[in-house]
Amino acid sequence: MKKISILILLLLSISAFSQKILAQEKYIGTIDGKINISFYLKIEETGCPNIIASGIYKYTDNKTGNWILLDTTFSEKAQQYTFVEHYNTGIMLLKRNSDNLQGLWISPDGKKQLKVSLKKIKHSKSEIEKMEDELEKANYNANDC
Figure 1 (cartoon, rainbow, N blue to C red):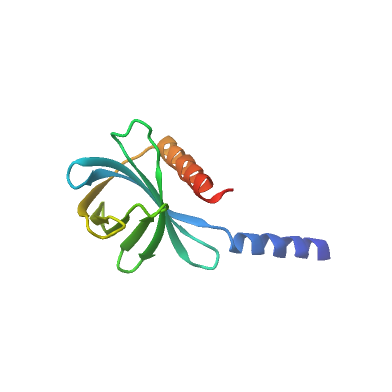
Figure 2: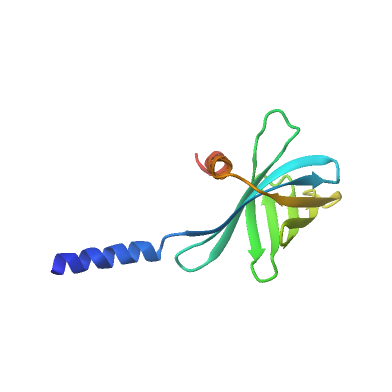
């Protein structure tokens, strides 16, 4: 009986620290009305409980198809996001309204500010799995030695 109690407590403690995915959203849109991009946003609750967001985007007309990892800070209440491109090549300040993300892309020196307009699109389970793979790969490439 003691072993069963310990096992149950262990399983409960593990589940208390698991992450719960709150949203996985794919967007398409433009920067400056002419640069086409695809954007993936993932919002999850950690076991602490903290809510964290992560994201990636890519230029859809770019043949290499490389995703840019975004370091994210956000206000859940205000639905305002600050996305810093991992290699500090730009920053996006976006506000989330139902099915849209709107805001600015700003160059690292602050001299260039371009309008960002993104619309959430419907996606299949396989598309989300692909986006998750791309997010994982971008995190690995940016943070692994």
